Image 1 (cartoon, rainbow, N blue to C red):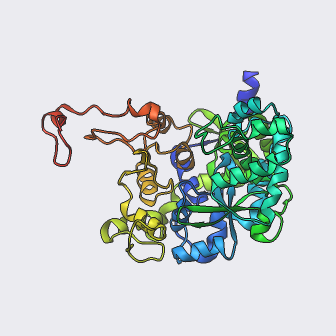
Image 2: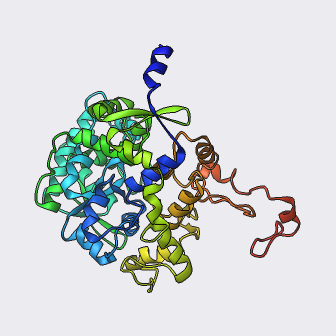
Image 3: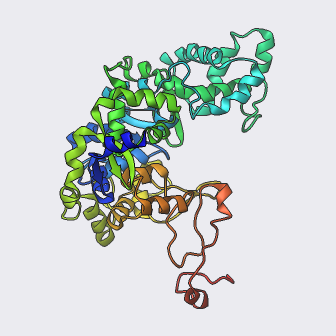
Length: 459
């Protein structure tokens, strides 16, 4: 068996870490900024994950020139050429409305392909309610028809609105359990039925039953795809194949296992989708391991860094980062960011000015900056180090099989920023790891005489 496998892979293309990084930068359209007419192609490369809220705006700022913040939001909220909905991994994603059939329908699992990563925790609610998954899911799908003619503000309100509609249809004995306090989170603000609905909103999104509406400040509206766009989400031919090809174009070389993690689905579903595009993929070797790329991307990988020199010679994100360091950061409109940072309107511009500074949320944990942060991409791409901010950021720009990058990623997993020599503290987003990463060992000379700006151990 081993001999047959070695013989099969003997003619495979062997890729270096530099070739993989250069291709991924081009695939994510981060090698140079394009014009306004490139908006849909940039957003449709592999979708724009919008967590935390506003991340999609920053991601497009790094790819597109000539769009102000208001113009971008107009494309999403008024023109509706872009749509935001729960997509891969159950995360809010912004993508072209014309490609809704790619970013939604293929994610719906076939019978026997559960559990999904976003519904694994529902078992406690199902046991309490004495109902099975399909029964509750059918109730939620029927209740979601309410959104075809209504808009609900707030995720918590959406859970309880649909739960109330379902509760009206249940017999008295079941309704008592349905309206009981939740076994998750805050039982005084959520019922057991509301908790079950909350888990199933993601699968409903894949069917076009729920999408994100307009966001005003911290308030997010929700409605159905039909109500928001005026039409049903189109079921595109070969949508499953096209979603798989998008992933391997942007994140290749990769494997079925990594594909399943990116989707947030079961290994069985990932394998089914992988087989849809198997004829368009070819195996390659990287770091002594085997992954798959699109056959049409072979030439792009072989180009290496030749096609990425534009990012150093003007027009690319590296040049923009350099100009930001010398002349100040730019806002989405091209001018220097001004205004009150407390308002949502200036959040992206203020983020550009404050990038590199750890920001804490209301729980006093470091809040992660946008994964496509311009300076972070430039710094990591040029130094060739493994990214540790997020596993998908790491996967997007650094070879998953390159030993050095992989070890750096594993060593730094859970750390919000890369620790530097002289740091007294590393910010960590996993509470379980916070204690272990609180202090870093310092060289002896730093212990004896800390440089300016670094507090001594006694402070």
